[in-house]
Length: 375
Picture 1: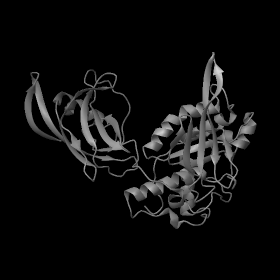
Picture 2: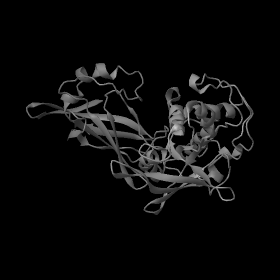
Picture 3: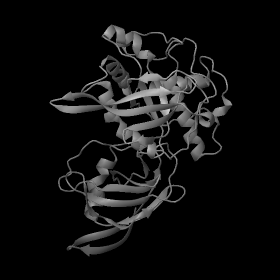
Picture 4: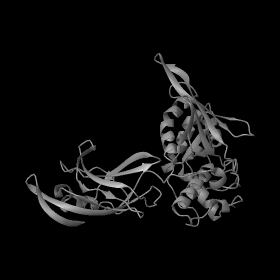
């Protein structure tokens, strides 16, 4: 950080500071044309006075340089001890600190994604030079081009980690498959090719990998990743399997609550791993048997057929190379509460040539990009 010049601002010393850093997509690829600015936050963490004298703009390598003001907020004696609490400067330390009236500045990133202006922000650190945004680069996904060329069907194997005790499972049967892993991995490969044309091509894999091979281990790990920290999202799959379809808090109503965030991500060129709830269980014991009969797919688009009818194209690893698989969704009244109508989504999975399958509900699973084999 270079001290370029000192002025007086409101009777107090003002230091003009030049700060350089780098901005990445969520998958770690550098992102160009991001405007970077610095603000003094208000106590509710909204943006207050702008400290930027000259905004930064990232180049092809994601590198930016900006000029900012107000040495009172950037003074090393105030921030250095907090900077050093995190050993990884590409990770944001979200713990709160009592800085009194001297709140940590906020660094803001503005960029366009599919024509929509996005603004991300993070706490500013003097020593922090790398920032990852919340989005991945937009992709043009197509199952016949970006999906695996084999079906989701694997031989039984012993999981390398202990699954939650309440599942009562010690051995993975071939009937379970690795649909979540195949969905996440297909997105991994697609993102890798977008940011690095020399990245491995998913279409080189034409046969189901044998247990223990590098590809099999990768798909297994990616399956487990979709369940989140400590497998918390497995519990959500179980909870939705036990819930009724209709009424307030039913699966159809909850799916309607989920839809706006899914829709926005898809319209921003992001793919979304979805869990499809096929099964309904009357009790816990029945749920333990049926939970694995639900399914995961990769959504890669969104369209509105009418104000209450929507369509989401999906990559379903049970049906490789099918570009016409989709979710058909309708918004309907599913009950009432305190005299007011309750709405929800009635959904079905459509794969031409196959029987339509009722989808009781769906929600997004955990996804963070990972390098596919070969990178």
